[in-house]
Image (cartoon, rainbow, N blue to C red; front, side):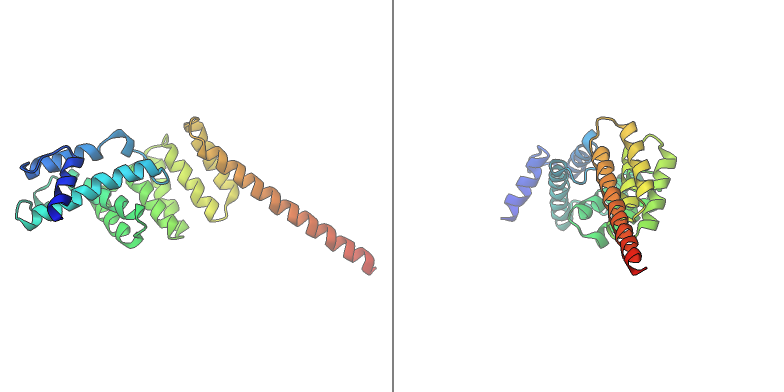
Amino acid sequence: MERELILNALSIFNLKEDVKVEAIRNAYFEKMDQKQFKRIILSDQHLEREFLKYHGSYLILLKHYSKIGGETYFSNYPSDLIFKFFFNQGIYYLINRQYMKASEKLDDAYKINNKDVLLLIYIGILLMKRKNYYAAEKYFLNAITIDKNNDDAFFYLGENYYRAGKLKKAINMFETSKNLNPLKTAPAFKIKEIEERINEETGYVSKTSFISKLISFFKK
């Protein structure tokens, strides 16, 4: 059963059983460096499954080769690969909604490189999911400071403001995200959703105000 698991994990990277550990590591990082993973992949089920497939298979192989003495810990890895692995671990746990573990791994990655825009956005998303909107805002703003053309940073900052109840700020961020990436449909849907919410709330206030005035009139 375990051997079948190992062989299946190797096949994910198109590798055979007698492959060296270095080749496994290279194949893993090559897969994870694909362009499709250079954006926020959350909510895209196809990309999430692809990510989990590659990273999960690598974890299986990492555990196996550690057991037989064919793999050392990350002390021999270049710092950029250590960063990428911790970063991927964080996303792996984030997708699986293990937010505490995700926080630990993303923080480990942040200690190595605190200027990576994609990492800053993911940390912001994690904080937002934990309803820490103030802290999340800072990470999104840091990402925007580094890359003013990153539509994902503006989109998730808008989402953060929306969840925090700052609707006008949210609309502004979604508008910017839409302008930066006109092909992305999500910002337009969010703007429409917020405008409908504002109209409902405004309509409710108007009705309440009208009823209050009517009661006051009959009391005279």
